[in-house]
Image 1: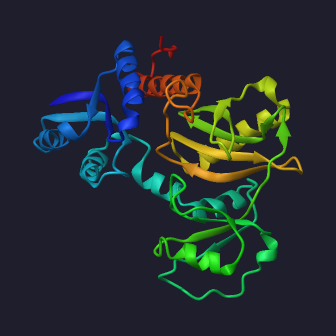
Image 2 (image 1 turned 45 degrees about the vertical axis):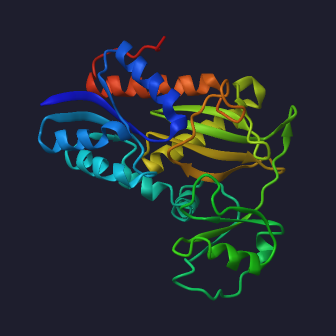
Length: 307
C-alpha cells in the first residue's frame, strides 16, 4: 500500500491558495501531502477500497459542501485516519443551540438567547418574552453557515416565524443584538482563530467584514488574555483542531461570544481579497497545522517555522 502522511480534500475554488501553501510547506517539512479535488476524487476512493492507497491524517475541506466527498470522509474515518476536524465532532460543535448551552454550563458569557424548536416540530410558539432580548434582535438558524438565514434587525414574532420557515428542520436562536464599544477607532469585535493549540486573534468589523491583526499592544492586556482564555476553553469543549469564533466587548466591558464555533473557516488572504484574513494570520494557521502534523507523525521531532 502507498501511504501518505497528509490528505487534503478541497472543493471551494477560493481554497486553492491556502491548500497550495499547505502542500508546499508540508514538503519542506518532510511531510508527504496528497491533494484530493474533483479530478481525482473517485480514483482516490477506488484505490483506497482496493487497499492500494492510505493516509495517516485527513484534512477535510470538502465533505460538508459536496456530497461526493462524504464517501471519502467515511472511508478514512473507518480506516482510523486522524481527522482535522473530526466530522462527527464538528457536526456537534457547529450547532449553535448546542454550543450556547455548553458555553453557559462552562461559564462562557453569551448574549441573552431564546432557543426555538424546528418549524417542522412545532409551528406555533408559546409566549416569547422579547423584552428580554430587546429590539432590534438577531435571528439565526442553529446549524447555518456563511450568514445564511441570519436576520440582524428583527423586531416582531412575525419576523421570527418567517425566519423559521427558511430552514424548517433547523432549530433557531433569537438573540440579543450586541453593540460593541470603540477602541482606538475599532469596533471591539474580534474574529479569533484556533489552530492546533494556538490562538490567533483579529479585529473584525461586523459591519464592513474587514479584518486586521490584533496585537497585544492594541488593547488592555487583561482583555487580550481573556480572549485567549475563552478560545482555549472553547477548544476544550469542542475538541476541534481548527475553528474560528466571534467575540465582542460590550458597553459594560464584558466579553461575549457572539458566533460560537465556525468550522471550515474562510482563509482567503487579505492581500488578495479586501475582506480576507490578514496574511500573517493565515500563515500562522498553516505553520501551526504543519507543526501539529509533524508532531503527530514524528512525535520526537522539533517544531520549526515554515519559511
